[in-house]
Length: 315
Image 1: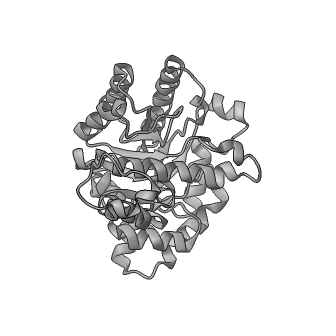
Image 2: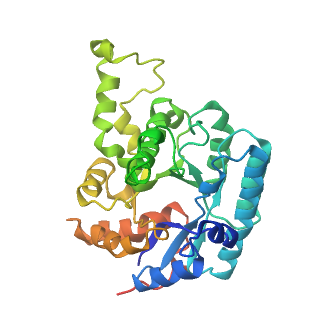
């Protein structure tokens, strides 16, 4: 059995505008079937809302929810579909999120690690997190199309390969040190791309917290909103395995453990990398029970899936 946590599609008018026919659900299911993946968590990354105002973005969210709900109805045995939203205190967005889950059958929520300079640890996002906790929703944090520092990374696709994971790492780090995770235990947070590589820097976050005034020359550490070192909070966060680099996956495994990793591919859009994503998990030197948890068990538990209703595992 394999559940791909990380797969994107877009409404047909967006695919036509952006010349991305690979972001179509039929194509997605075809390539996942060829790779032996049984169930796909489908999200719309909605990179096209980057520069839209709040009203037009809300219209795009509603259109996306209709589109994803239709996929969920049409392919109930192959897909788990999420809503996409902006985490803020706008009642219209909160109402739409509740409608998407309670009435449209969407099973989780996708958010950008930042949106127009705002990050999900900010106070304006607290009503969003309170609603997600009340609804017991998994929240998938994924980079926007580009963010801070992009003016230095316009060559060689560095915005995609470096800038975007940086933003994911930063968003998770801010959720930790701001105290959001301490104040709101039980949130189901999943960081895309092994949390943007946060496992490689979490030790630095620990010493920034633990060394206190000894490293005053590195800048202030205030106000202190946490009572444990940051790595302890990171263990409460899930990460998908879409990283394309075996040592990065091993670092995540050693940092958060096998019960916090979810098999992911980012296909679509990155369809050619899908078989390699399967191989990365198969290369891990772990017991088969732990490998099964990464391939499907952790995702099934996070989504509260009825195991009896899941497709038969492929051999």
